[in-house]
Length: 182
Image (cartoon, rainbow, N blue to C red; front, side, top):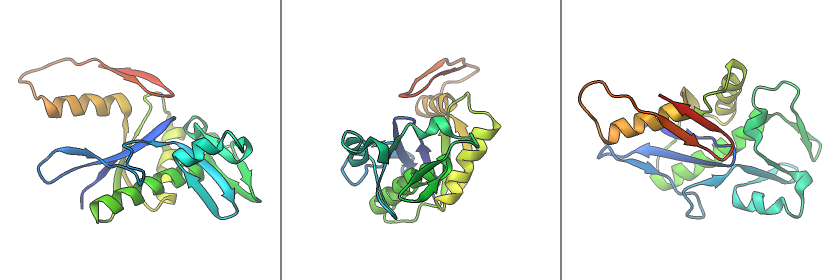
């Protein structure tokens, strides 16, 4: 089974896999977009809307929309209540992860089980463990967590391998973070 890579972003998220020919493929969501806004709209009890529609709903019902939840990961005091149900940042992130997995299953016609999730380089133990819990809540097997700029460096080296020792400086200009890695 192919592991999928997930960028659980502060602003937008996406999921990708490596196809049979070894080429990385970003999965498009149900709207045909390569990224899904990291927004959740708790429309009614038991029903959450994920992505662009959720982000757009923030204009009319900001009290029912959560965005930038990644900034709350690992905080034990962070909790939200919608329609009488309590949500931790992990549960909200799990909704995003599940949406990405469903979109990938639709496009690839196969199950999404094993995943590697990228996290900001500044994430400590609490944030990383919260991200792992979010994956488990979403029904995913989190094989590994990878720092976002490290993922970019690995991608670069995979696409253009070079002989010998090389140094690569990667800038990660994310929607919510700015990281660098050498």
